[in-house]
Image (cartoon, rainbow, N blue to C red; front, side, top):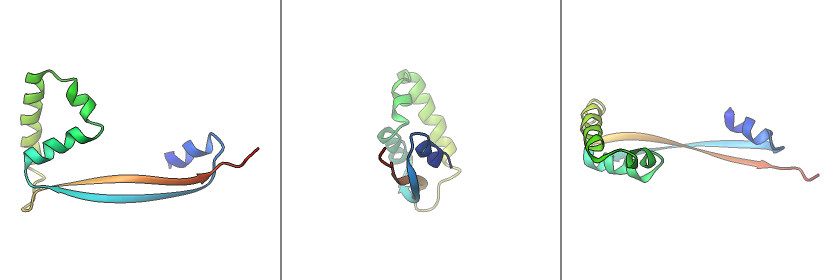
Length: 89
């Protein structure tokens, strides 16, 4: 796992890595699109010129139709939590 390797390099030991998945359900494309602005993708969206952004939204919302379920658009997010210690020298 890359996270364990990253912790070993600066001298951490005794790794415990936990994975948590969270499923979010957005009622429609507009709610789903708005969620994209609340995390890392926001930086890329802000770099787009208004006409390009509008076109991207149209295209992506059309593609998301293939994933839409009866209760909305389901999105799975994964978080990694790591606990480790660094021995004193």
